[in-house]
Structures are given as structure tokens and as C-alpha cells.
Length: 135
Image 1 (cartoon, rainbow, N blue to C red):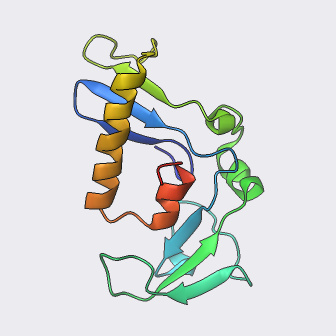
Image 2: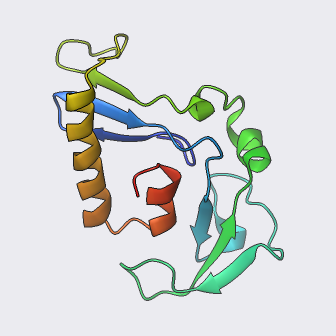
């Protein structure tokens, strides 16, 4: 997915897109080289910026800065759909274009558990798990 929007888990059969909470927070951007990140214009280093060892999988010193909805909206355009809070589950084996949302709470709970497990395995920051309403 795009930074700060849905996160997707897929096992090749189903695809689960988890929507963030309605405030999409807390959301941070991490970087070692603040001035050279090529993929978007970073907000300025300011009082929101902290330096520390924020990610469990590296000892590197990183910069971390919270991102507001306004800043995120400037990057991606209209976030109304993303911030609707509607997560979506698709059977990509039968619906490759992901046009038909599966409404099955039991199956969705299974994929929520798989997503939590994957985030734990990849040592996602705790605030990311909170932002996705998975705490």
C-alpha cells in the first residue's frame, strides 16, 4: 500500500486490506537521511522531529517525525475512502480485480490474526499496530 494508508496482507488466495483508525494516528515517518529521501518531499525537520533508536530490527540512529492528516493528504490527495475505517477482504483467486468485498466476519477475524502475526514477525513499530486498530 501507500505510506500512511491501508496495509495489505495476502496469502495468494485472499487479500485483506486493513484500514487505519479514523484519525490515522499515530503515524510516523522514519529516515536515516532526512534530506536525501527521494520518494517524496519530506516535511521539515522541526519540533516534531526526534532522533533515537526506534525500530527493533536495527541499532541505527534514526530520525522520526509524526505526520498530520493534512500533510498526508498533500501527498496522496483525497483520503476520505481510506479514513472511512472500512477494511476489505477479497478472494483474489476468484476475483483478481478485487471488485467484490467478502462480508464474512469469521474469515475477516482469521485474516486480522494473520496480519497481526505478520506485523509481529516483521517487528512493526507499536504505533503502526495502534494506527491500524490492532492493539
